[in-house]
Amino acid sequence: MKLLLLLFPFLLLNICFSQVNSSIQHDGENRTFVYYTPSEWDQSQQLPILFVLHGLTQTGNGLMGITGFNDIAEANNFIVCYPDGINNAWNANMNLTISSADDIGFIEALTMYFQSELNTNPLKQYLSGFSNGGYMINKIACESSICYAGVASVSGNMTDTVYNSCNPTHPTSILHIHGTLDPVVAYSGSPTTGVSVDASMEKWRGLLNCDVTPTSVAMANPNFLDFSSPERITYANCDKELELIKITGGGHQWPGIATLIGGLGNINMDFYSPQVIWEFLDGKSCPSSAGIGSIEQNQIKMYPNPIKDILVIESSQVIKTATIFNLTGEKMVNYEVNAKQKTLDISSLSSGIYFIHFNNTGKLQQAKIVKL
Image 1 (cartoon, one colour):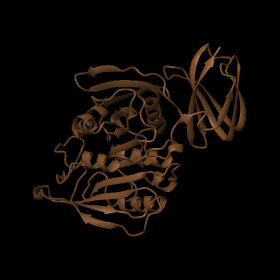
Image 2 (cartoon, one colour):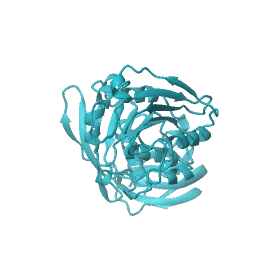
Image 3 (cartoon, one colour):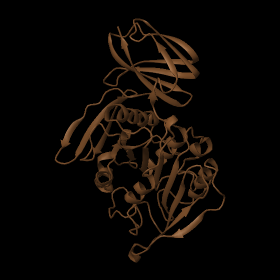
């Protein structure tokens, strides 16, 4: 996993809340994002974090402006982050080539940054995305070594590649919202957009060990002039929660948001999708073993510390990689370990304090080290 380099935040507004535009260097690219912290937040609190990914041609700032997730974060005391894809696109293995960026690594880098610098809760990390961003969060849920406790996709889906290879390290709760008349990402699937919504739900049903037959309940339909109606399809006895909100007659839109920016087709106005998404995600948690813990908690020994030249690491399980960062988040060196015991030569590092991150069979651990 390629990780973050350097953060350059600047405060845009600080009256009773904080909205910050920032950037990091990742994989040789300057990656930008905006995030919001609620007014009651202080760094002693370990708040949940929600990453919201925009659709193709959109931006994080633009998505922030239409969804209202900042207001929901303020009311429910969580942090929300809106990253930018390179050239306004995400590398979600789309059937039509859109981007080749390391976007899983970028989102993982942001996740670890927020943990280390804003003290976000590693067990309460969530993803949501629209269209291309929805495809991206499905890919992350299938392939990331980091645990996200819940993901919610709007008008996005699984590509053929992700569908065929999906094998989650950390099973997660899934909410999918999709219109049956979506003119961009067809509900029934297509050669350009991948599998059908029903096929992807069946894929998740199998991965989450749900009962075969779900239950369907019509949602309130007070707005007849939107020419659409929602129903909530829920799968029972799953390892995690699995739900589909199927909008008969709905288009390629955020339900409940009366804007045409980035969308096509009917906008269902029977429910406010950002609020429904947060209600689905809120309170969901990864198992404690899935978080990034300290070395002591995860039974990895390393010595000596402080270190002059050689660091010895020992573990009861095979450690795949060890990565060292400086205090600003710059990746200094990455070691391919693939062993239970290893000596690392860090003589090339300058004297100072560093973080070392271990990837231990899909679990991430970190600690501080001092180089003499």
